[in-house]
Amino acid sequence: MNKSARETPATRPRERDIRRVLLVVLCLNIAVALAKLLYGLFSHSVAMQADGLHSFFDGASNVVGLIGMWFASRPADQSHPYGHGKFETFTAAAIAVMLGIAGYTVARGAIDSLQGQSHAQVTVASFAIMIGTLAVNLGVTTWESRAGRRLGSEVLRADARHTLSDVLVSSGVIISLILVRVGLEKADGVLALLVAVAIAYTAFTILRGVGRTLSDAARLPVAEVVAVAAGVDGVIECHSVRTRGSENRVSLDLHLLVAPDATVEWGHAIADSVEAAVRDRFPQVTDVVVHVEPAPPPV
Image (tube, rainbow, N blue to C red; front, side, top):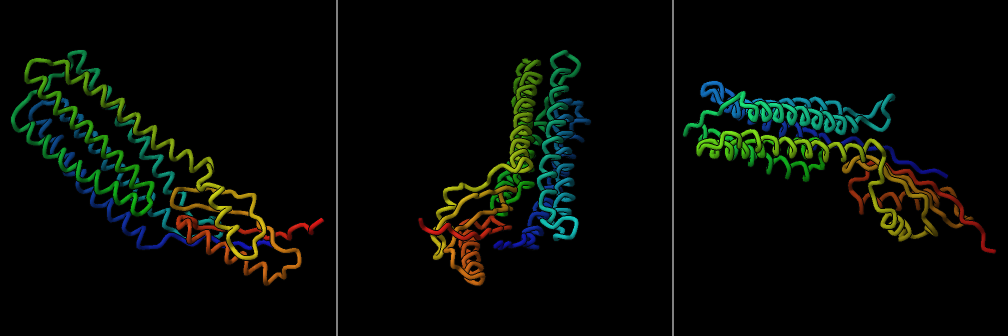
């Protein structure tokens, strides 16, 4: 006997909230990028120009996130019976790639600086713009990260880490401006290289999470699932538990042993109860397949 519950599409309010967050962050990233890039061009500051370019990568990742969420929000159809949820994971991977490109851009600028091909021009306005944009990015990172945890969104969490990399870059630029102001011209390049390493590590952590989803790594502790199922009346044993999916969209299948004389109706009712218990204990479960088998007769 097999009892299956098809995946329920993600609720529209969740997808709408994710898109709203991405739109707000996109507008803020564009404003921050323009401020740094335009003043960097005006003051001939290569460091600020590079930081502004990096902020534009943040905005580009927001656009990618919005496109990915549009695909992920589409309901299940004949060609995608489990829905389109993995498009959100693919989007997180795209953000990680863009983050890697940003890291490369920062590293290249750092090397140019160390080779004496660029010289930062430090002014009071430089500090004012960098500190102001840094404050905006810190607020964006905190807000987006909390929204990502609340909505269980890989895209928002990945994008928040991307924005955090901009915080690191801006902090490095501010420190380098201070050191350049006191005569240490090479400090700009050294700090930029350290920031590039931090950006690369952030991209790696995002890809590691994406890899867990795409490689169908287990998402729930088997012992806890077995305990929940075994606690339902009529279940003699629970085994062969398998889970996969993203953190907020987990697919689960398991096997139950019930009394050998159980009727089809009785077995179906037990499967329903197990499904309800599992969903109550693990709200992130969106798809449940319960295989009901007769227990072997006692010897």
